[in-house]
Image 1 (cartoon, rainbow, N blue to C red):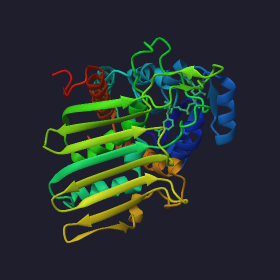
Image 2: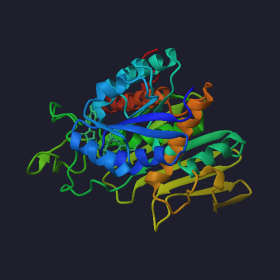
Image 3: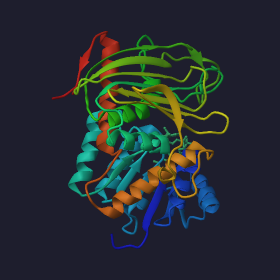
Image 4: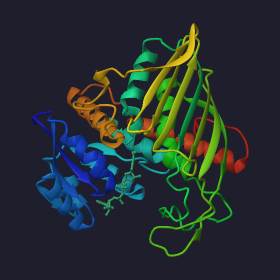
Length: 373
Ligand SMILES: NC(=O)c1ccc[n+]([C@@H]2O[C@H](COP(=O)([O-])OP(=O)(O)OC[C@H]3O[C@@H](n4cnc5c(N)ncnc54)[C@H](O)[C@@H]3O)[C@@H](O)[C@H]2O)c1
């Protein structure tokens, strides 16, 4: 990389860019945000003024085509991700993209292959993989703390949409109202499925799942009055991994509890880890460990080197975890080697798992993976 600092353009001047992405880039002196683009130009201008970014525009094609930009950061609504990510990779940029890159895992895999063919790095917005606690847990697993892994349990649940009055985005206006549409599993399951894959270190061999629509009518953004929405607002599935580990995942956005609502548990022959990413009483996460001769779970202090510069357990998880994600992406780009964690390949694997669970729910049976040999 010939430039002294990575030059980054952010697409999408919305809530998540404001609270996580841009603060993450601006926290690391090795990168600078040089452009901000939103199809609503005044939003881009407002952000540029607030974050002191020189260029504000509503023309994403022009931004992606500029040769003085190294990284495109996509924080736009989900249905736009694939088009923007593909164009950015074709233009030779490293890409950070919010999840999912595409609804069909084959599209995400195609984008991962395009990146690889051009020697570019990709990263998904798998925020929670980068929490200091989840990173610490993975280092313990690498050091053999778990021994042989037996069982993984993952939860991602909170009560963000328990009230039908809280407007939800319309997911698919053309969907058959008699067929339950995947919602929580995709929006909330993806991060904990990613953690399960990373901690267990093996793919799924097969899955079987179930979904429910608990709150049948709700407000929808841009529409007035309650609407019938047959969406999965709670789901559970079982998984068998190729290395013999058993797993379960449970996600919901109508189960009472605070953000982000993740809990990941791994039990093995030598030890067990429970990592809880639920912001409670000002603390973003806790990690507890137990061993065969110390079966009472003890809370551990997360070593400081798992925190970003200036980070601490009472910082908001939004900026804390994202600062680690962005730092890691900058490390990977500047190192230039093979390392690329939480990449589009990981995104494609998670999306394939979700698609397999969807198929299992609709066909009421176990589904083998990979979906396409
Ligand atoms: N990883 C996480 O933990 C996490 C958390 C929150 C949101 N997200 C994801 O981040 C993304 C953005 O969410 P948000 O809450 O900020 O949404 P938002 O609606 O507040 O902001 C999105 C912005 O993108 C703009 N936009 C739309 N199409 C565009 C295009 N082609 N080029 C440039 N700008 C465009 C919109 O005008 C809007 O201002 C979503 O995909 C969401 O799922 C991820």
